[in-house]
Amino acid sequence: MDIKDKTIRWGIIGCGNVTEIKSGPAYQKTEGFTIGAVMRRDEEKAADYAKRHSIAKYYTDADALINDPEIDAVYIATPPDVHKYYGLKVAEAGKPCCIEKPLAPNYKDCVAITEAFASKTIPLFVAYYRRTLPRFEQIKEWINSHKIGTIRHLHWHLSKPTSAQDLSGDYNWRTDSKIATGGYFDDLASHGLDLFVHYFGTITNVSGISLNQQGLYTAKDAATACWLHESGITGSGCWNFGTLEREDKVEIFGSEGKIVFSVFENEPMLLTTSEGTTAHEIAHPENIQLYHVQQMRDHLLGRSQHPSTGATATHTNWVMDRIIGNEI
Image (cartoon, rainbow, N blue to C red):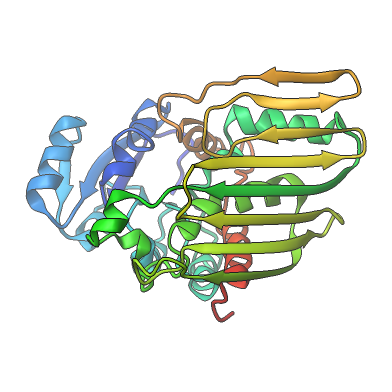
């Protein structure tokens, strides 16, 4: 497919909440992209989504969308347990693809998906959009320009109270061990771990402890870990989803300063050097995946290399599996 002189028509499989504001509108706002069709098993919801977002077609059958000759590329926005199933179909159809994060529930499935696209030289992107957000790129610039000297260590603490849904026992796929062994860790910690690889390079050694402390659902709800980047930087983290208060704090320690920021909260980024501490604020765009989607367009046009691919996302899953204890 020669995409340089045409509008890329995307199809979305799984038009749920993540596509309402975070991602879907970004495809419509990106020059050279449009959404040509959406798919959801519930026909009424699929039709409603298409109508509200001014999308011409909707399907209840993913195969029909994937093989639609008027769809050039596919965005898979389903829960991760079916990413491999749909991803392999898109690869077989020979179409570029973006898959929501994590790429799959485990490292082995990530490898299978990534190899399927690589074997056909088809672009595969993964929605680790923090790699493209200006807020986090500012931190990367501080690191690369040695604002805090040589980086020694980083630590991330993420915790949140038990939710009403958790306490109610109502079903939540994010805490179903068949879909996400690590529970909220898979959904949330993946963002930060992927970002750290973006900043400091491949993780070569990692170990962790994980368990279910509360017994409210089948997935795990607590984890701690330590790791080593190929650059020689050490890292540590702890994630707990049954605490009194929510906390999201990353500290990057350097030989001449420190950077403190939040992965999920829009709090000021703190840069500490010998001259003192300064606070910096960079707001997110309304559609948080906008820069991620725009950079997919640039990648497809040969203008630049997208920072979040199947290969990078597969490495992130390898790290997560080592922490959670999944078989690799």
